[in-house]
Length: 186
Length: 183
Image (cartoon, rainbow over all chains, first blue to last red; front, side, top):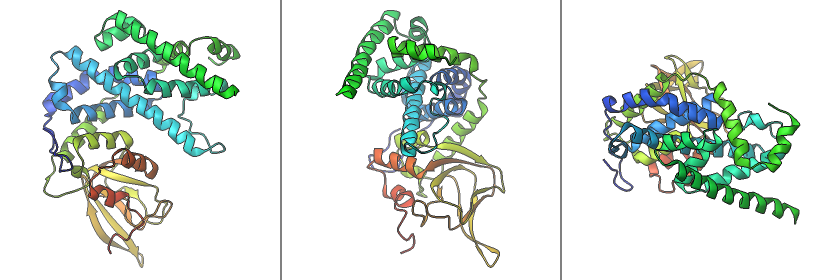
């Protein structure tokens, strides 16, 4: 079911029998992942809900996946994307509050004490957001505290693939962060 | 968790490894997840999408992809029957898209309610004649339990910016806020 470009959207035909068992079975895991990325229950719940709505809007793709594992990996990719978008939104809100504005308490509150690492974190999230999708999901799951084996299992890929994504991502991030700190010295 | 050592260590340590440790620590703090609200949202989105497509409203003027992005840009709020979604005279810096439940829109005249509209699933409330920073010119009350998407004007501007091809009905209803709704 697709929409005509610029026309009225056709309602996608997702039956409750199809989607609700998946929502029940997978949401706990998706929430835990989102919480470990975002550190905040309300935001993590938003990420999970957004992910299901996105899945509904893309249902032919979800239902074409053959196994529960593949569907779960697909949903993990979506929830990671939604979590990243929420992080972007936090930073945007923080910017719009300005230097002397009251800071949004949901912005990465657990690094309150680390003024120095804050800028580095901001740059890191920015750089992670620019990674190609497959690599990005691996890196975000790593930052959520999962190890290579767990990530491989969650995404249905080899541990060695996780390793090579991480190797390349580290190289890329080092370059970005180094570039930023050298830029500051000039 | 907070001592000077971690910050120093982070200087030398790979930033990804630092984030990895922080993420792992968060696992113990993860609360139990109640799936019911998520199911309610999924059902509401299904319901509003199944509304009669012949009556054009904000929601069904969007493509499925745009609907998904709108949900991502918004937060969810629920209101019991009888609760006010917004009050006449208060600051108007956000709009709502109703997913489930009917509402009435009224203004007060000489201490009496005058109902000016009813709004239901798929429709927007809080948008007419309110330039950013302006005040509400009507009160909106839930006639039955309401589930709505809430967008600040900033979030809506970002959403609109990322979707330059939004249909006119959407732009008219929420973006073109300084023009007279009844020319």
